[in-house]
Image 1 (cartoon, rainbow, N blue to C red):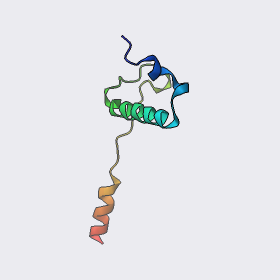
Image 2 (cartoon, rainbow, N blue to C red; image 1 turned 60 degrees about the vertical axis):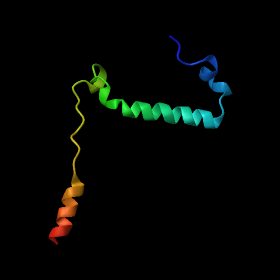
Image 3 (cartoon, rainbow, N blue to C red; image 1 turned 90 degrees about the horizontal axis):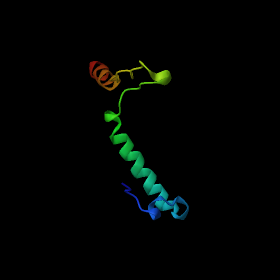
Image 4 (cartoon, one colour; image 1 turned 135 degrees about the vertical axis):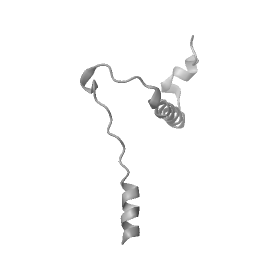
Length: 67
């Protein structure tokens, strides 16, 4: 099932603005679906887990309030 027309797939005929818009849309969609990506199953990232986010912001606020 083809979802894009031949015109949509012809990058040479797209203007810079159209290419920028297509890239931005693809990038936004890719970022939104990161949580649904499967875990790494090959290569150097097997077994690697991203570090837990640290919240230094709350610590800084508390330290300023204590001063």
